[in-house]
Image (cartoon, rainbow, N blue to C red; front, side, top):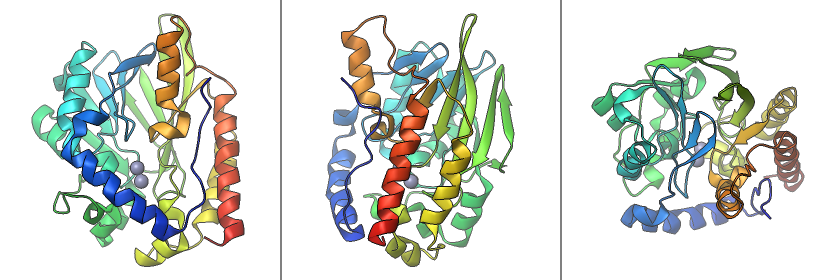
Length: 291
Ligand SMILES: [Zn+2]
Ligand SMILES: [Zn+2]
């Protein structure tokens, strides 16, 4: 049986960084080893990400909406995944980047150049990157000279982005980054509608005080995250999405779907609050350990 989510174990900032880098070198050498066959989550909502980072595609009836473009070295896999689902990347009208880190906007510039899509990201993260581009963490990647994907649309708290029949409500949810956004929208399958919630930044690497000092960010991120989690609890969702696959156990749920045809573990009205409980428990650990 799959879990709802796993948010990792307690390590020091240094241990997390030391683990992150070698792992990434292998991924840059042979990205295809991290490929995931794209699949339908529900109705017009699809998974087009890989084993490292989540990407989601919504067929809005008037063009495609893409949440995140992953790492720069996986553009070809994303293109392939979109074609494999029977769609055409030329139909992408809007790309929404979840937050201002290089592993989520990495292929955005290529997609905009090739397919003409408009790119959106939170205003807060965009301004923080203008002030200091190191905050995108590109220098930690094997391609430190890659360019930031600057958005055409800067999203503010409460904005609604509309494409076709899809309305995406955006809620500023600082914690992972200061400008991390949560997104709420409906996925539809014929007459059936499911509420989808997506917190676009979950990992704790960027919550460590040491990290915040290094990048000139406020050191009270655990407090900010607490407020964000409390606000997110006010939302109901039938489906919640991961920002990286471990956040909602994307790959385990996918495996479950394959082994149990006709079932869809992504649909779970309890999942969102289980996820928020796990996030709050991890946050409280951070606070207790003084990270
Ligand atoms: Zn991030
Ligand atoms: Zn990330």
